[in-house]
Length: 142
Image (cartoon, rainbow, N blue to C red):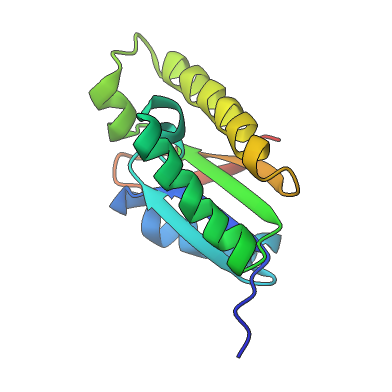
């Protein structure tokens, strides 16, 4: 049995995302070759906002996927209406939240590539079309 997968998905732990994210991944090219999952509140938010211990722990888990499972691509998936961001920031608009999350995804990419320069990083945005996550529009933004 092989313990190799091509992809690592970093996603928010929000339960509303489970059904639609699983369906989207299975229908995308990201399911080919398998994928590991890191699921934390705010997806890659703690790489930016966390202290050094949290940041290093996060990077350690990425390292398991890259070094042990030989993941070549990291998918950083953030979404609208994120509670982790709402707890820490007071956004004036939906657009302001989106811009902050996009900026954080870009910063997290820089941090990850410092340690794992061999990986490809893809950003995915999930726009919740309803408050329960029953319909999500997924968009690759990089």
